[in-house]
Image (cartoon, rainbow, N blue to C red; front, side, top):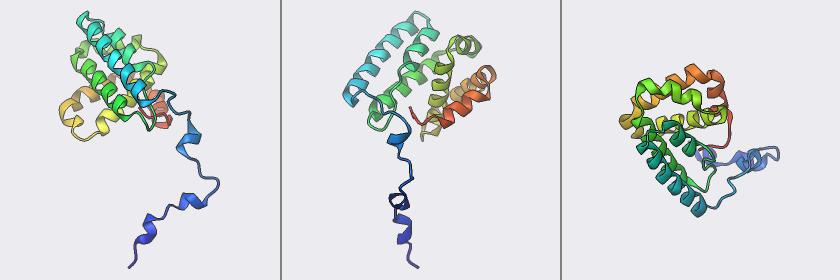
Length: 156
């Protein structure tokens, strides 16, 4: 039986097929600029964490997060920075931190939680932390946060 038909991209024949580039604006920064900004944010986050400002650190990471196909290195570094914040936060502080975030920041946090859970190996290291944050975020932001994170095409 010939299975070569599975390798055919049928969307090339459909003029109504949507491309990712048509669904959202790509990140306007070039990859080097995005990586440089994320490295600067990581340094500022470490400074905020040393002062005990978890909300400030999370806000730094979540605002203007890199997205799109060209900035994978910046996205991974931003995820590592975010997970370090989540790991350093006490479980009793999570609800207060989540309440202090804006709706957009909560949605971006949900995207990062799902990305962290989806990556191989991350669940072993930070799975319980990510699930704990997911639980508290869903309690406070509601299921709308999950829907917005799932349907937004700007993948972090």
